[in-house]
Image (cartoon, rainbow, N blue to C red; front, side):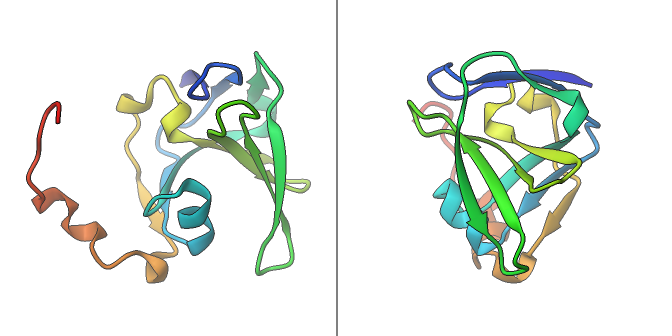
Length: 132
C-alpha cells in the first residue's frame, strides 16, 4: 500500500510503501514517554520503500536497554514524532498519526504489554463525544 504523510505543521513530509498488515501498538515506557501518551502506533516500511519528500527532520538518539541505538526523527518546528529506525536497521517505523491514510490502517499486534497502562483495555467503555 502506498502512503504519504507529514508532521503537524507540514514541514516534514514523506511517502512510503507499507504492508497494511504490519501495523502495531507498542506499550513500552520509552514509547509512552516519547509520544506523551499511553502507547505508540507504528506502520512499518522497508528502508528502501521510505522517502522524505519535504523538510529535514531532527534526530534524537535513544540508547535502548539492549544497548542498541534507536534513531527517533521528529519535526524541528512543531516537534511531531514522525518515524524511527535502528542503527543499520532495514525497517522504518512510521508514526501512524502522521500518515494521511491512517483511517485505513488497523493495528494487528501489540508489544510490551507488561508496560501497558492498566486502563487501556477499558477505552471502549468510556463515554464518547463526536465533537467535544
